[in-house]
Amino acid sequence: MAREKITLQGASPDPALSGILKLAVMAVGGQGGGVLTGWIEDCARAAGYAVQATSVAGVAQRTGATIYYIEMAPAGPRTPVFSLMPAAGDVDILIAAELMEAGRAILRGFVTPDRTTLIASTHRALAVSEKTVPGDGIAKAEEVLAAAEIAARRLIAFDMDRIAVEEGTVISASLFGALAASGTLPFPRAAFEAAIRATGRGAEASLRAFARAHEAATEPPAAAPEPPALPPAKTPALPPPLADRLASLPEPARDLATAGLHAVLDFQDPAYGRDYLDRLAAIAARDSAAQGFAFTREAAKYLARAMAYDDVIRVADLKTRAARFARIRAEMTPPDGAALWMTDFLHPRAEELVSLLPARLGARLEGSPRAMRLIDRLFNHGHRLRTDRLWPFLQLYLLAGLRRWRRGMLRHRREMAHLEDWLAEALAEIDRDYPLAVELVKTRRLIKGYADTYARGLSKFDRVRTGARLVAGRPDAADWTRRLREAALQDEHGRALDGALATIRSFASDSV
Image 1 (cartoon, one colour):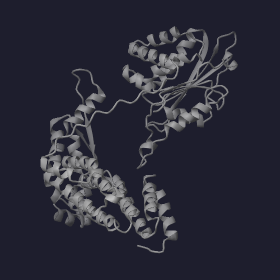
Image 2 (image 1 turned 30 degrees about the vertical axis):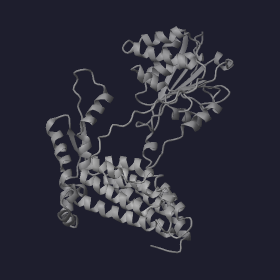
Image 3 (image 1 turned 90 degrees about the horizontal axis):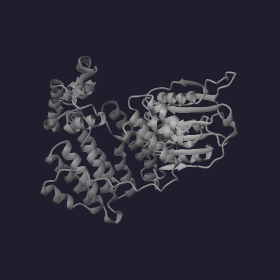
Image 4 (image 1 turned 45 degrees about the horizontal axis):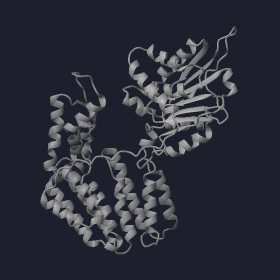
């Protein structure tokens, strides 16, 4: 993010803070919202304040945050009457454990420029709605930050999650440090630290994160450091004949072709890599240097995707690689000597099983509804495999070993026929409408995954091609094809694509 930290210091105290202080925390599971609330309560009670804390649970899986609400006032002869929930325009301090939670708080009116101090971590934990969009569904963090600068009376925002992770704790400790540094609560720093120490276990890591966040919140804004350069990816050396053939391709397409060749080799074998280069060389021969070989460049990427498709064999191969087990162990960080259990869930459908058969036999079974019903009844149910054990691991390993016979299988024959049809249609436009030809190559982006995900992507791909045929010959055919592809990426079920196709059909004179 361009701005690592935003702090607005020096604001004069709000007169409203002399009465009841109202503080809301928005956090999801695993971020320690309850712990943070408890620390704030402990600080207040130790200082002689009357406190009430409530919480309203959100929905799991990042579709809603839990709202923790705290009201406090100096204890007196009369017990104050506290509210149970925050109200729009009536929150003094809003703590957001993730950037989009700050955005939601602003939309709900909890953050106002006349009174609210907003403390937010700028890291992202993507919501389900962002992950399920077929294209790029990630919300724009810059827009939320810009809105926060306007909506809040005072804003403290930086990556508090990174500090917590580096210190081996959770973000609640970092948020607590930023809250202490803000000066919005009338308690000394020692009171905040005492509340953490009282928790006992994990207190030292939490105190370290608290101290770093406190320092970050009180320092003046600094220019964000340049991100470190990523180390070059480690890829196996190519055999000299393949490397020489890569070097003969047009320079604009060479980088993508290199990555594509490695993907194809990882998927199958050197002979399959030669097939990839044969197709790409034939494409380059049809392309034009005057166009910067844009068609070849896009084909290098999407041809590799089409040849390295996701099938059951590929899934089994990836699940049994040593690198996967090492990555999961590094992420889980189990104690030394602790056993790590790993359960993989498989749900094979009849179509996927039949696709592994020799092409002729698979086509015969697929054409028999009775046979498909029987296979579905026998195998279409969930399987949980403890792949940290020998026999379940061997089952997947043997399944991955079927790759040597992949070229004779029904799924491979079908994928190659589809690939040839797609490329032929795109190449047919390369002389008539070069921009349209490039857009037709890019439509392959819509096909990904396997099972239901693959079926939905394939359906969208075919519908975009139908729309492209309707506008072929028009000067804006490439632009309309691009719009169709972008519409297909907007939602899972293709409603935006349906609307774009309806628009095209309203003015197109030809029909398919």
